[in-house]
Amino acid sequence: MTDKSTSLPHSTTKTFRYGASPESATHAIILIHVRGGAPPSIVIPLAPTFLFGPTESKLCILAPEAEDRVWYPARFSSRGTENEPFLNASVERIEREVQGLERCGIERERIMIGGFSQGACVAAKYALTYPAKYWGVFILSGALPGMFQYILGSFQEVDEYANVDLQGTRVFVGCGDTDPLVRPRMVEWTGGVFSHFGAAVEKRVYEGLGHSINQDERNVLRAWVSEMIATG
Image (cartoon, rainbow, N blue to C red; front, side, top):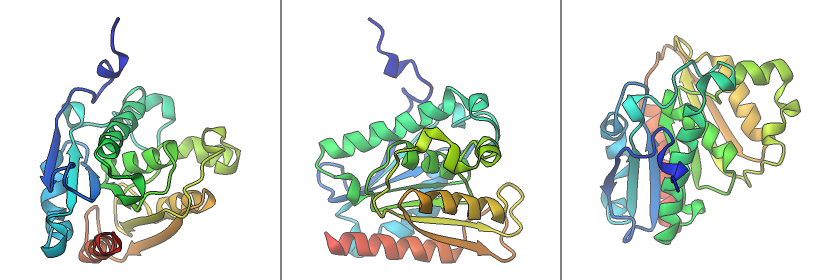
């Protein structure tokens, strides 16, 4: 019998680990890289934000790798079918990482999940597909995929997420007002969806910022991880 889980896209690529091992860590972060990138492309810019002093021995960072460096082929705003089976396979890959952390004793409420650009879009899709009380979800220069479909129907009428409850999970959504790929209205809409489904949302649109991560976003994430580790 064929194992379907290993026939999906992204199912046989590597996961890069930084910081403490899952077995010794008390908390974890899953970082999701950009289109055309690789795990180091998201970890290297953010590692100093997460790994410092009191966090180094307690925090495990996992960064899975997309097949051929692309999580899904079309734009995030495309109809859902245009990005399948790749988008759902991306979500399943993140869930596999979360389940591995759970087997090591790290519960979802002690896990942060996020990414930049295409990785941020995967994080958004994941959180609504596998809703729970996470420590936090951060969506940097990204949005919820399938927005064209959802905007046409209004998200209240989309059955896919009808029973989602994020139980107060904090969600950060940020982008620049000159970002050529993610417009501020997409941040507003994505934040609205997460608020609708029970998240505690913070939205920030940065004047003059293009498609990149800025220091204020790093400061937010550093504060998150400091608080996460401190609360045990």
